[in-house]
Image 1 (cartoon, rainbow, N blue to C red):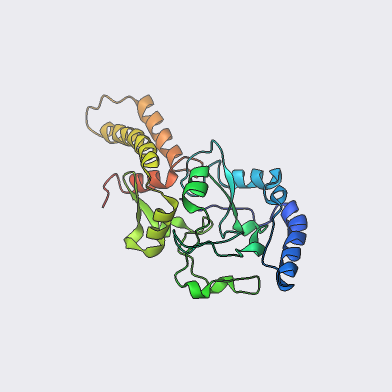
Image 2 (cartoon, helix red, strand yellow):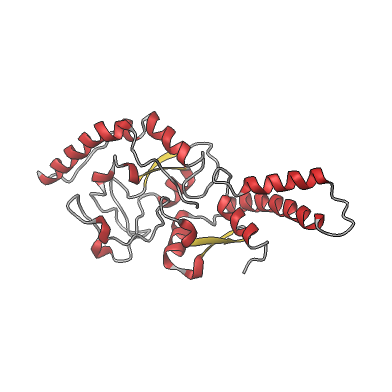
Length: 249
């Protein structure tokens, strides 16, 4: 995961129709209803998806794989939530955040549908905001918000995602999002091997009487520079590898 830097201004449809829908949901709750429906045409509008795609550089907000397909992800689940796998789905969910820009991301179907689903664990479940009158500021989510700085919580040892200092937020995020599932590890491993090959070319180029050509050195350096950019797949892994000179602790 890397930090997602979204525009501070929400797409117009969220600011207008989304705001109206939010008001209606809150009024419905206050009238006593606990069953809600949501208008996906608003939070899945092309303007919303295009802005998220730009902010996320065409990558899943969780695993950083380039998109083949994607879902609009509600970080705090709109319809219902579970504290942990196996729990009964509790309703209502965070209905008042269904059209909130800060709560929307794009995620690949594997991260969203196979792993995260309706999971949203808190350090202290008794502090959960149960409705729009609750205080989100009192919650302590155990999932890393992609708009936060994930590098404070998770890093990499080679292709394996690890928590920084064993922190619970990193461990929980890795487990719930399946950031070390087998297929993903293999994809990161292939990417890392290519990065390491280019890194070794630069190292060899520093040796006396090297046979590495200037052109090959330039291509290697250009490639390595590209791997740590926000737009690159698995950029967090590449940064961890290059910053440590492949000396993983």
